[in-house]
Image 1: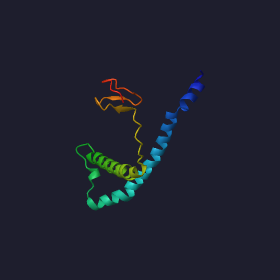
Image 2: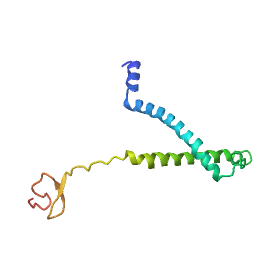
Image 3: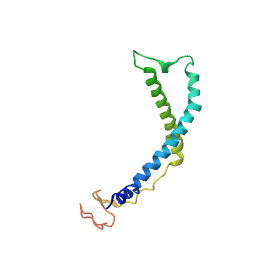
Image 4: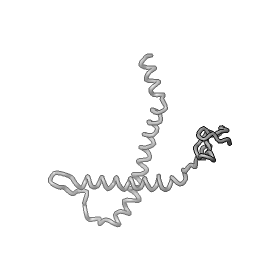
Length: 129
């Protein structure tokens, strides 16, 4: 098999294409979430935090503690928004109720052991159904 054929087989695998689509859609969805957080959530946060505190510029020796703290707070806010929007809100619309699988066994009335549905005698106590 030539390298061209191997590469074509690799690219045409379903999981490679699914991964590519997921990365593209994830990037686009990330922009939506960032815009939502920057435009709606963060202005609401400014009502709670005072505007004149520049906590993202805090420095401890040569370490930029404020930058790490700011990135951590931003991450937690974005994670909370994604959790609320995707898991709680959209999860209500996406819920799929699966039908219970048909039983493959039945219970013996004499010994309460599980036996195949088509059985006419219990293999444990030999009682007849």
